[in-house]
Length: 92
Image: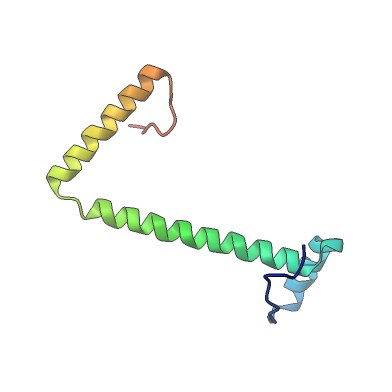
């Protein structure tokens, strides 16, 4: 991969961590390992933030909205069961 569109950075890490990175990296180099690790970490952070937003949304629902949501979920479960789709079904 070319360096176009990339920035060079300097980081300080523990010696044992760097030894492990070097062992895993082989000829691929440290940069690829650190870039993959950072991408994974950022995905995890974005997912956690989205999970928090969804939780806040559902916690803010009124009792009537919770009842409507439950009704829609049950309708979706029933339709999925009719079609043989079990993806996302809730365990009761």
